[in-house]
Image 1: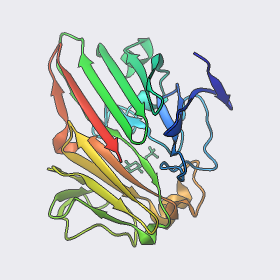
Image 2: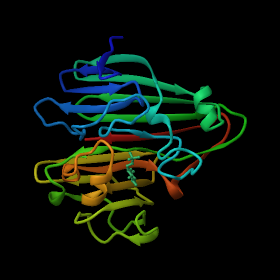
Image 3: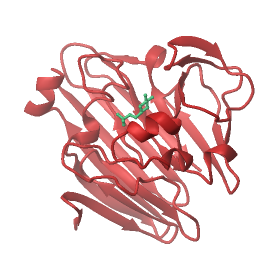
Length: 275
Ligand code: BG6
């Protein structure tokens, strides 16, 4: 396999007749996906650092084995996003579809943080649509709790244009107030939003002035919607002060009430299809 370098990070580049993509080995982090003839689907910060041990700001960071601070003993969003993954294979299914398989296993480094034996397999299918499939297997003799997310940053025309459908009448935990609320109508933005929606059972539709994205999740009943708005954006690493206007995160998740308990020798798969 031929790896390219961006600063000090190795990545693989996929180009087929339907789309192109770039995936860093650190975090198995897809930081570029673009369909032929269209603008990039994923937002990527112009000032992302591409440094060892730091998550790329944009694309699809993987939050694993803990979303946010669900496990307070772990770093925010876990550690998989800054670990080195192995690229096992690249399969050209047909001229329009390429499947890339990554894996991550426990190591001395992971066991210091989280003392479990595990295997994670991540299959990214790049074509007219983008498929993400993350399978976690517990290889330990004791059960573990898993919370996780595809922390997808979507490129948008402007945050003021955005409305999100598919979460109407769902309850959410508002991470800003720690209160449980009920979603009234579609989601629009005029301030910081940081919410974990529960009981999600339908596709999510992201609309802006230029396009529509359909997000179909399986193995998941929770979705995180996040935009930092002005103040938080200005204080965040690897983000320009005006960046909050250019992206929204809609994260396919197993978070809070939707965290999963994995018994020894059992697996759970989180899947998202972006159409
Ligand atoms: C979101 C969280 O998923 O990720 C936010 O809900 C958090 O609270 C954001 O600020 C970004 O996190 P990080 O660790 O990538 O800066």
